[in-house]
Length: 106
Image (cartoon, rainbow, N blue to C red; front, side, top):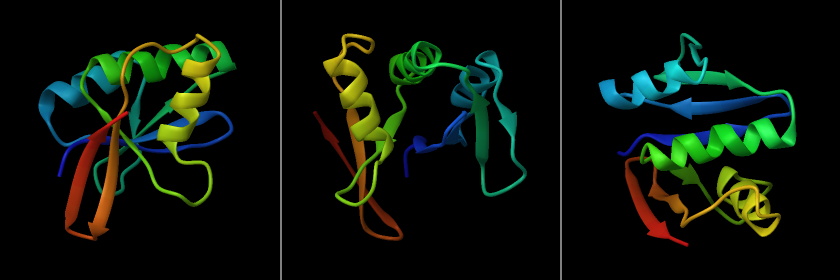
């Protein structure tokens, strides 16, 4: 499974990062290890700051969690792209079952 943006909360981004290069990218953004299942947290203070964090994660090669329910990270990135605060394609991570992740580019 690829490393990916798992969830976006009101003031933090939850990221699953296992690869050393991706962990370094998360740490460079101020990310801290949450102590649970390779999950890291990156805090942000505004929509513009969130956009810059997500752009850096996209540029580092992270996928964005997707799906049809709720407000997944891929949908947030698309919304920011519509506002011209986020640029480029989005690699959306979807799961066919708990151990089968697929990536589609949007």
